[in-house]
Length: 301
Ligand SMILES: [Zn+2]
Ligand SMILES: [Zn+2]
Image (cartoon, rainbow, N blue to C red):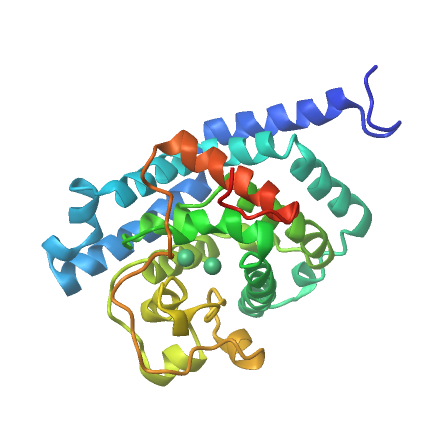
């Protein structure tokens, strides 16, 4: 039998990958997907009420530019479960195996032991947000930035932009999560209210709603304008506002944007994505990430 080690037969890995892929393929009507779509639908409705139909995401999705077409491809991948399939494929199943091993050997599930359900949700959101913050900082450096750039290559926001991202960026994130997720647990993360809250917030922060929510947005929960600054191509906004839900981490670690310039546009300098098709957008970042690891100019041949 072909093996990587005595405990890790290749057949076992592939059966895990196949099982995960099958689950995801069947997942287009799954609870997670429906919660995600419900959250995005709330943001779509809010935009139409606040901004009017012609400025809303719904209008722009029905009249797509190149960047919006890329978002549409990614949202279809997500809804059909293909994104997770690509994750598993790109990682040769190692993500699935790493998560299983971490659960088995360091699965302390500390968060799941918090008694009160509301407190459990709060603790869960706080620790996942803390992890997200540091992982996100990593995603802006070297090879990982070449992969994360796909998410930042959006040239307009339309709520579903949240689903845009390179599968290998996702793989690296899942690896980073495997150990802390096993240590701290997070069964509550599968609860419907938590899934919907996360989806609404992710949709809001990738919408063009002009809300900044005053002191609440500055210190308690990131408003739409907070993450828009993170996606800005303006130099003074670079490497600011890494947090997902809570701005506290950016305040604590010195990456909160304290200026008063608000960008209208989003995107990255020298954007080469959204222009040459999905296959190119999938392969070119990998080539550049490898060149980055080898210390070569990323855009060289
Ligand atoms: Zn980022
Ligand atoms: Zn974003």
